[in-house]
Image (tube, helix red, strand yellow):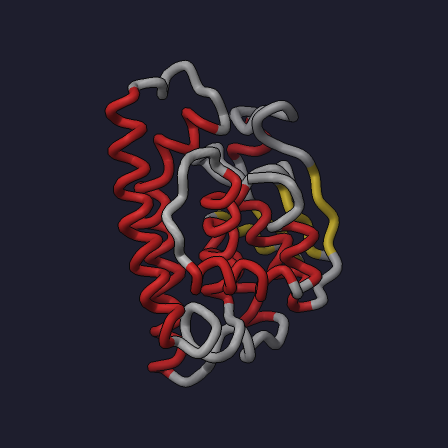
Amino acid sequence: MLKIYGRDSSINVRKVLWACAELGIAFEREDWGAGFRPTSEPAFLAMNPNAMVPVIEEDGFVLWESNAIIRYLANRHGGAALYPLQAQARARVDQWIDWQASDLNRAWSYAYLTLVRKSPAHGNAQQVAASIADWTRFMEVLEQQLQHSGGYVAGAEFTLADISVGLSVNRWFGTPFEHPPLPAVAAYYDRLTERDGFRRYGRNGMA
């Protein structure tokens, strides 16, 4: 059986949990990370020397990095509907997965750590404002994409890209500041909520 190492409050662990829900994969999960067993323990470092969650193990195969994990799960467990085999369609999915991991994540990090996590190391008002401005700019990119994509990030059908981006959209709405109107993003958020996996691991009260 698939084993997942990481606390379920982690946005990156939740990517993996949601992917498992979409793919119908049974799993066991162990709590590791903040508030649980420290990822600095030798047993965890032997699996991931970066000391970060999530990590998975399946039939002796160990893998870390959430986006690599969800791609692997789709490839391994018949998820071509979520991760297309055709080169251009797959590249479009990869484009948005990588955009979420790089541009979008970097933008929201400081504001989220200040406004939600209440991190004492992230209380600079100017940096919060700059983070919100950058975050908003990238969310406007998503708004434009959703206005003509056909309903989901990479096109008309739900894909792995929506798992990565959808959890960031949940974080956008769950972070307390004045949000500009983004009607296509709001409709997308409601559309995702129709999916059981998102209700369980995305729009479930955790930002």
